[in-house]
Structure formats: C-alpha cells, structure tokens
Length: 167
Image 1 (tube, helix red, strand yellow):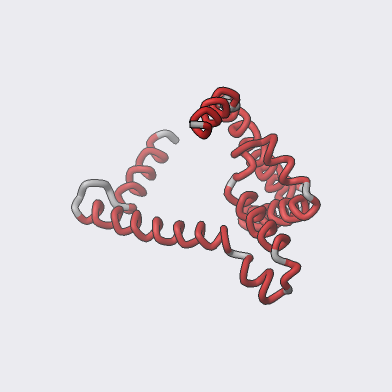
Image 2 (cartoon, helix red, strand yellow):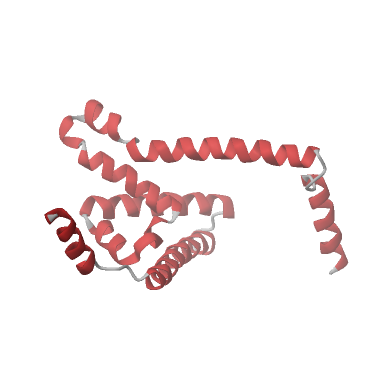
C-alpha cells in the first residue's frame, strides 16, 4: 500500500519534458555543429589551398580532436545538457563516446582499462551500422534485380539528361 502511494506522489511531481522545445534545440545545435564543419571546410579550401576531399578530412580530424579535448575538460558534457540530441551529430557523438569510455577506465591501465573499454558503447554502434548497411545493401540489390527500383546506371543517365537539358 505504501509503495502505491509513493508511486502516485512521485508521478504527480515528475517533470514532464517539453518535446517540442527539445526538438528545436537539438535541430538548432545539430545544425550549428554542421555549419561549423562546413565553415572549416571553406577555411581549409580558401585560406590554406586544400582540395575539397582533403579539406573534408581535415575538418573531420579537427572536429574529432575538438570534441575529444572538450570531453576531457568536462565541457562537452555541459554542452550536451544544453544542446540535447543536437550534440550527437554522428562524428561528435562518436568521439565523445570513445573519449568518455577512455577517461572512465584510465585508472585500470592502458591495456586492461582503456583498450578493453574504449569500444564499449561505440562497438555496439559500429556493429549495428555494419549489419544494417549489409541488410539494406542486400535489400537494395534485390529490388534493383527485380526491377522495382532503378539501378545506378539508369539514375546516372537520367541525371545527365536533365543536366544537359537545362544548360
């Protein structure tokens, strides 16, 4: 009886999340991180003379390094509280998960601590990504072979037609 009453009191005073506000906040900060990435690419191309592919790689390294440093300093966790899911733009969220796992297990040593615990969270993400890429790749292949969706050569031919048509 006491447990039910306690649960009722707890439910009555429970804070309800504002989903719409959280969605807008996540959208804004996720977009801000992506805009910063695009600005870094433009900086590397126009100021330092890199080609687009190299500038993109440098941007990834810069964002991963910045996220790891901010996680190590404890700043990224505070940013995550403000930015909500927007702070988990794939590359920053991945870097944060790796750095957090490494920091938590550093007291156990390099091999038994950091090396064994580094991919605890990120490992599951990598496995899920590889398995889902395989499943959806096979599904796409089957749909192309059955003629349900167009293959890459058909799409490329259509794109070239429209590009030449609108010149």
